[in-house]
Amino acid sequence: MTLTFYAPVFFVKDIELSKDFYIHMLEQEIEHDFGTNITFRSKVSLWEINPDSEIYTVKGSSFDGNTFESCERIPRSLLWG
Image (cartoon, rainbow, N blue to C red; front, side):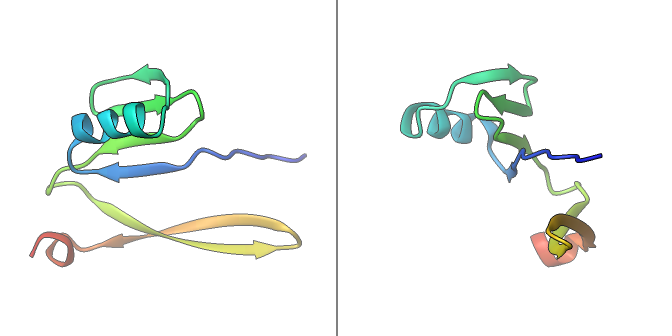
């Protein structure tokens, strides 16, 4: 079975400012708008974060031509002092 899913997610601090940028500067069209989570027709997504969120780093790797990602938690103190 082959599973392929390409849907980049960008974590942003200000969803309204970011949404405006993606719509007007990058000419993206909204597919779903859930307030703090937006998906564009291109499948790019924006997720608004806040200082209390658990943020994870993503590390990519490849095995036999299949790319996968793993995540690690980043302590809040490193992000917001």
